Image (cartoon, rainbow, N blue to C red):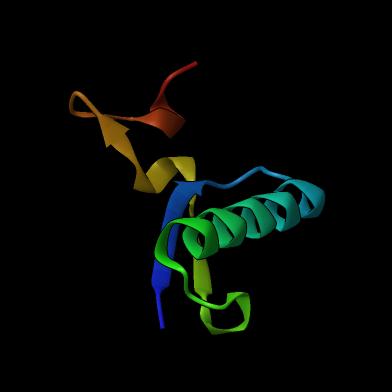
Length: 62
């Protein structure tokens, strides 16, 4: 049973997340041969104050 975790900044619509899950599931099924009903996709959303690049949080940038 494949498990896939997608980490991304919050702000995507439910429609975008639904499409992401469908496409990731399709890609995993196609490349691994796993049945779609056995593929688990986790979406972990982070706020901009929990994410930093180059020592600066994204929430601190204008």
